[in-house]
Image (cartoon, rainbow, N blue to C red):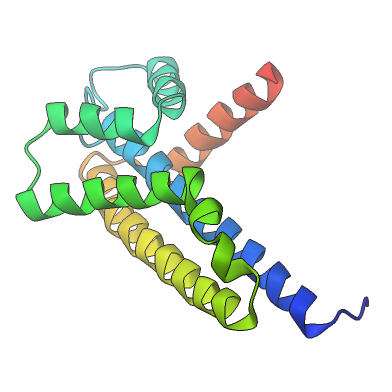
Length: 167
């Protein structure tokens, strides 16, 4: 195993926490796509499996902002939850487009990097909690419509396989 100095270890930790935060943000994005295909979609009795897979694939191509707009048009969300989703979009966009530029001064010191690690962990935790809430809605829809978690997983695997083949 490679031995690295404490500064290099901390720098790697910043990048790892950033990656984890972005991963959890993408989970939120994908879960909203699932919601638009299930809870707020046409309904399991109105579309075929192939149509569902196509709907998922279509939603997976959209940005988080576009997905939120579609979600807001599809249903009436509680005001506090809509604010939570909008805040998540802002945080995700800030991380993706501005984070390292705005934290350049922090990145050059141990104390600054430690702050970044905490900040990124908080962002990751925030997205993870939101993903869990959204997942509950999807799972509730699945139970009400006699769709198993295996069915949902297989649909996701088909969409991922199709995306891999396209690349």
